[in-house]
Image (cartoon, rainbow over all chains, first blue to last red; front, side, top):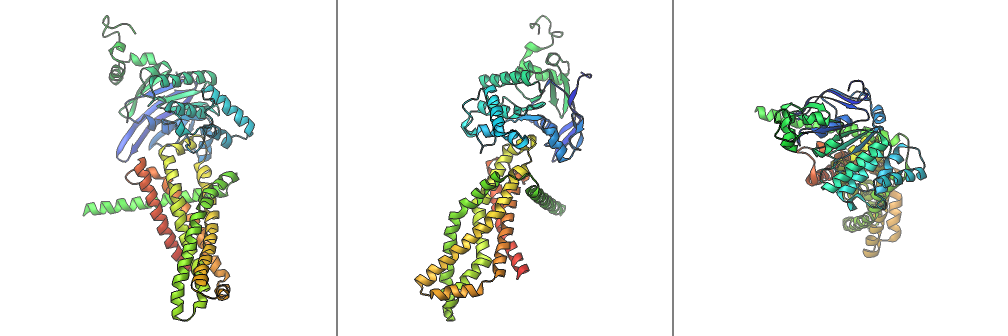
Length: 264
Length: 262
C-alpha cells in the first residue's frame, strides 16, 4: 500500500461540535486511482470526515493532506485550486433547484472554463448520454425522481473530469434497481475516467463489490482500512460485529466455524 | 447567581459571534462586488427580481401614501390658512423621509424575505456546499449580484415612490379638496432643494445595502442560528428574524442619517 500514490491523507483529525466530540483522531490514507469506502453506523461522523476532505470543515486538531497540501493551512485561492480536482455527489444531490438539468451540469463549465457555449453544450450532452439522461435537459430538479436526481448530480460531479470524486451515501433512499443503476454508472464512469473515489455508504455488502479498500468508522476512530476480503475476515471485534450484523453469519471467519458455514 | 452570569456570558458571546460574522460577511460581499470578472446577466436578473417586480407594489403604496399626506396635510394646513403650502409639505415629507423608508419596508417585505428564504434553503439543501466544492465562490456567484441589484434598485424604486406620492397628493389636494394647482406645484418648486433630494438618495442607497446584507447573511448563516436553523421551521424563523431585523435597522439608520445630514 505504501509505494502507491496517496491522494488524500488524514492525520489525527479531531473534531467536536459543542461538547460532543465526533472524531477522536482519524488516520486514513486514500490511494490515487482506487475506491475507498467508509462504512459505519449512522451518526458516527462519516459525512463529517467527507466534509473535512472537501475543506468544508476545519479540524480542531490534525491535518487533511490533499495531494500533499494541508487544507486547513492554505488560503481560499489555493483551496479553490485544489477543489478544481474534486467532483462531489451529495446525499440529496444538492442540485440547484432554480436551474434546469442542463444548466446544473453546465454550471461548473460556465464558471470555471473559458470554453465557448458550443463546447459547453457538447460536453453537457456527452455527460447526459453517459448517464442515460437524454431528453431531460429542460426539466427542473423538482420534476425528477430521486434516482434521476442522483444521476444528474453524478453528471455534474464528473463534468470537469475530476481527479477525485466523493460520494455521500450515493444510494440512500433509492430502491434496489435504482441503486444498482447508480453502481453501474459509477463502475462505468470510473473505468472510463480513472478517478479516485471516496464513498461514504452503509449499503453493505453491495458496496464491497466496488471497493478497493473499506474503512470502518466506530467510536470516533477508523478501526481499520482493509481490502473487502480482508475486512470480512477481520478479527477486530468491532468489525466482526459490524460484518455479522450487516451480512449475517455466512461471512464469518472460516477458522472459528469451520465446517459449519460454507467457505467465503 | 452563577447561572445568571453564565447566561449573560453566553448571550454576549453569541452576540459578538453574530456581529463578527455579519461584519466579515459584508466585507467579503463588497470585495466580490468590486473584484472582476463582472457578469451583467446575473445582475440584470436580480434587478428584475428586486426592482422590476416590486414596481407594482411601490406604485400602489406610493400613490396611497401621497393621497393620505394630501388629505392630512390639507386639514392641518387649513387651520393656519396655508393650504397653498400643501405641495411643499407633501413633497418634502416624501423626498426626505417617507419615500426612502416606506419603499425600503416594501422591498423588505417583498424581496428581502424571499432572498433570505432562498439562500437559507440553498444552505439547508447543501447547494452552497456544492458551490464551494465546485470551486465557485458563493459570495461572487450568489451574493455580489444581489448587492449590486439592491444598491441600484432601491433608489430607483424610491424615486418612483416619490413621484407617485406627489401625484397622489396632487389628486387629493387639487382635484378633491380644491387647492390651487399652480400653488401646489409652485410651493413644491420653491421649497424642495437639492439637499433634500440628496438626503433621500443617501438613505435609499444605505437602505438598499442594509436590506440585502441582512437578508443574505441571515440565510447564509442559517445553520449557525441559535436552536439550529435546519428544516422548514428554521427557514421560516430565520426569514422572520431577517424581516424584523432589517425593518428595525432601516428605521434606526433613517434616524442616524437624518441626524447626520441635517
